[in-house]
Amino acid sequence: MGTDTVMSGRVRKDLSKTNPNGNIPENRSNSRKKIQRRSKKTLICPVQKLFDTCKKVFADGKSGTVPSQENIEMLRAVLDEIKPEDVGVNPKMSYFRSTVTGRSPLVTYLHIYACHRFSICIFCLPPSGVIPLHNHPEMTVFSKLLFGTMHIKSYDWVPDSPQPSSDTRLAKVKVDSDFTAPCDTSILYPADGGNMHCFTAKTACAVLDVIGPPYSDPAGRHCTYYFDYPFSSFSGIVFETFSMICVRI
Figure (cartoon, rainbow, N blue to C red):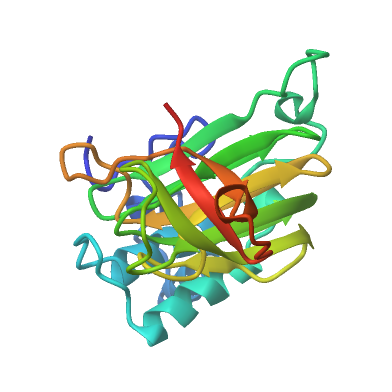
């Protein structure tokens, strides 16, 4: 897969080469060329802008490398401006319908772009859809709720805490709240910000995710899913802000 090739069925063109004025002949007057140059500056689509910004922010592409605060704010600002129509999703699409009764609704993954440095995707959740608790090892993740209301619960590991077993650790709750679009883009970091999270859709929801660097088994960035249990289940003492996180087998 080429590093500048868009792989989504929704955004088919190479975003790095999109020319909004490709049909304008080159032998027009100077004034026409000036209009063309102005158009190139003003007609950059939001997805193109997101793509270009990600290339700058994740230029390093190394595991565990957190972008500078300036770059974080730059990417956050771009995501804050993106609307559902910019990426071609709306609540009336079939992805957001609960079609099977008695089962958890299917969550749809829409792939927009991926390279070794970053990935861009959309998760489509029908009402009551769930993305189980999972981690983002050595990654920085930006999540933009495009529409709907979603409950997010996230955790960070408690450093140097005792482990009852090799696959169970103590974690502290970072976020446990409902979010309704439009809202600020959320950011999690390799060791902070709620690196493990779970999404539960209260209504039909779409989430635009930017992940840098993306999951990679060869690079050791595996996606692991977890169960969470109240800490009192292990200790007999109630700590509402702590849970024991256990790997799902």
